[in-house]
Image (cartoon, rainbow, N blue to C red; front, top):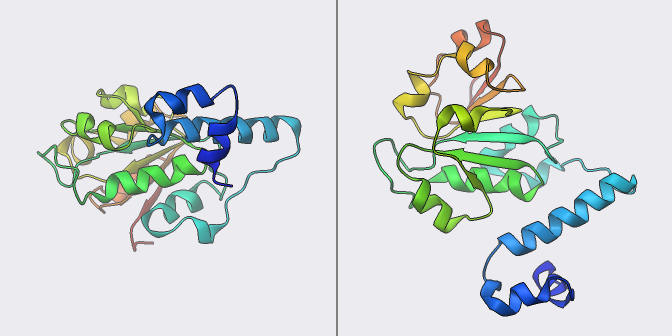
Length: 193
């Protein structure tokens, strides 16, 4: 039975479905999150990721976290298809962000212009307008749009003062890999060593 159907049959949650949430991914996501948390808390569920299930550009994120994505904090820098735009159509950024969320990660997205459009399409993600606030407490940082705010104005040292982890996945190969590594970051670029 599909999760959305099962969640709709749950007497504690079916009211939300009857009130027009049938098309929203957020209610099934919350229901799945509750199931996963209960399983982990009871010790009956060990959550690791099968690499085959994390396809495409999300693969480096899963690998960088040692195949354990559940309850990790991931900050995504960028949502727009390109800098200086709020256009999210054809943007791989949100598709990459949604995959770890589906595996139980807490995903926060920031973008100078595209947050409103992104939130309308993917309400299951968290959105924060301020870059530094979005970085606070992140286990992993994922750069997916080449905004100057990320590639030129964000220093590895400043980012390290905000994050919990020191892993950065450069999905656009727009950062200075040497500078990030020299600052103690586990830098991973696309198709780069």
